[in-house]
Length: 375
Ligand SMILES: Nc1ncnc2c1ncn2[C@@H]1O[C@H](COP(=O)(O)OP(=O)(O)O)[C@@H](O)[C@H]1O
Ligand SMILES: [Mg+2]
Image 1: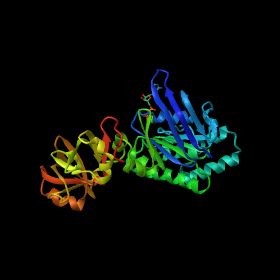
Image 2: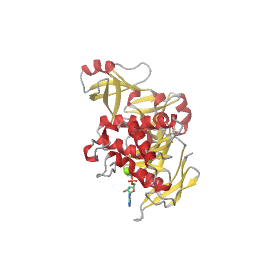
Image 3: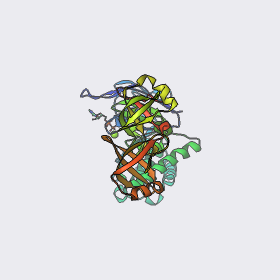
Image 4: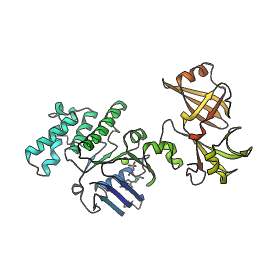
């Protein structure tokens, strides 16, 4: 059992800077939890407190049944993989893999067995006699992961382990690490994983759940699907998803007894559900948010309510186009399948087109608190 619990966890650095503001988080035994957020939001600080590499200023960290605040790293049942690999340069791959186990005075046969097992899982068998400088970035990172695996820890910690790899390798290592987690689970030896990244694609594809952080606070902890479709606030809405959600100021105007968002010179009606939720916000300034894939664009007005804007730019992604619309004094992004977009784009840019939103997928945020008030 290795549930991980943060209880009002705080970090104040010696210069007085408060990096972590009393966060609460429960990571279930065997769960893959991703902590994501922009650079400087205290992901590493949080992970390092869990690892025992950084002192805890307030609150507690529990691993399994134990409060580990005052335990040394090696007493916590964890293994950590760093961004810079941290391999010993003068040791071969085999020696790097075996080093931690030797320190723990494990019998040689047992060490060999665990090292061979890890080498097999990570396909390192051909590389065992090489030195780190004779490895590619991807191979070095596999050795770094292997060094964590051989320890058979209760909890794996990863701090941006793929950031130094190129995009292709990143994608394949992402799958490898996810598969490894599933493999351990299937074999009846699940390891809890805490994976830190600033990359929302890694977060979305790897996490059972994702914890989104901003400036030392937790903004939302949820499944990838819920973060994407039901963001609790404007920060999460904007951080998760690429291209980004369109988030723009608007006024909730009443027209024919119904609330509408105003988009440029046009109005789009709220759904019944939104109407009910937002009655108190009539005539107020709020923000609306809509993801690019829920924006439709056409040459002619849509029958059931739409707005107009100028098509100012397009980007060809192959299977789809990003279409940029100038509406009033801002731009909106639409994400349109190629077959639909091409005839429109062929008629030329810088002309009036019509668009609408799938209002069921639209979010409304309070202008002051930035909370999602349409959920
Ligand atoms: N040793 C330190 N002393 C003072 N401030 C620090 C120290 N280490 C990190 N910080 C600050 O704490 C904040 C969080 O840093 P960090 O945990 O490294 O963020 P992240 O990993 O999310 O990029 C940053 O503002 C950083 O400048
Ligand atoms: Mg960091």
